[in-house]
Length: 207
Length: 207
Image 1: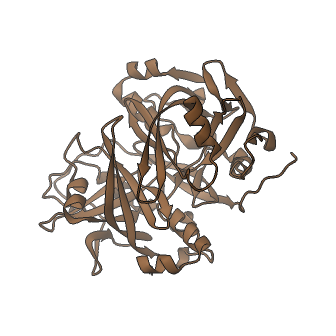
Image 2: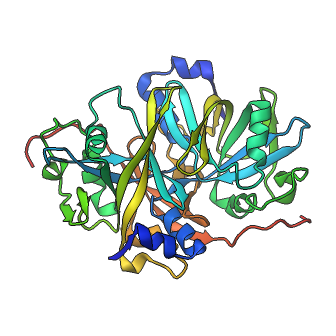
Image 3: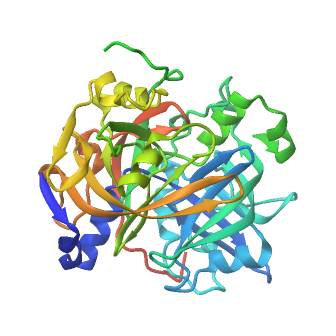
């Protein structure tokens, strides 16, 4: 095996280090976060850092680096208090990835990609039309991670929309049935296939 | 599409809500975290919440619910300051999932599964032998997420071991080459296949 010590990380090129360290924690979720400015301008951006934080209440988190460059997602969700999360499917990976381009604030990523906007009367942030999972979220809090000046946004799920065919009897959603993808590193997209589910694990006292 | 409002979440059965809300944020990483108590007893536990926090310094995070039940991983990493993260491959999903069973503190999950321990002289926490990605991490900090009494542990990567065949020229690791899996919901395991990588996205000013 190749061994890298912490001193080696510092001597790697920036690109090599970014690719390596972004890959090693494993697969990440692929979601588009939709927001709207106070002036009504929509914004859409790909995130690989959306995580489950809890089920009761239903909470999610994601990581932002607000100090590096202008972050329209952050500005908008702070200004309006709301955002949407939309699952990325195989069909749209190219458009989803393109939302990471740094457009000026007055340009909507919906206009620069084939992703279509869906507005719902019950939520003041744009959804991605056709996404098999859509969430209307409320900004709850943010935590500054002082070790590297990032922040974790905490949001509550207020509205959840799921394609009917995805819902199983016990609430589990088999993501591959909708072609939902996962992110490998900074820029790799992969399509998972379900292997198996396990029952609740209980101790056994023999091997 | 099926619509759930926040009021609906509250009226769902606990199992249905757990399955649903754990599925909707998308695919999660699959890692085994290894620790050791001050008495030298090893512990190994599956986590689906390990995330990338930053590349320089190389930081990871994961979520714990310490207030619910005894959490040996948390006790050990607080006591010793160190832990390991080990990628889960297809071959070991059954054993990896079994580490979620609640064993007493004096029982090592390495003794109750086919997962084998690997000790390295440079790190005082156990690795999973044969895992294609292994990290020796140092506890850096923790953040209490007061919205639901969870905590996010922040750790720095001090040592990284990667199977040689996984490393590409620019540092990216194609996780499916090693059969690394991803987690869907609470108890589903999936195997991704790489679709494509994208170059750095730049604005285009026409559609």
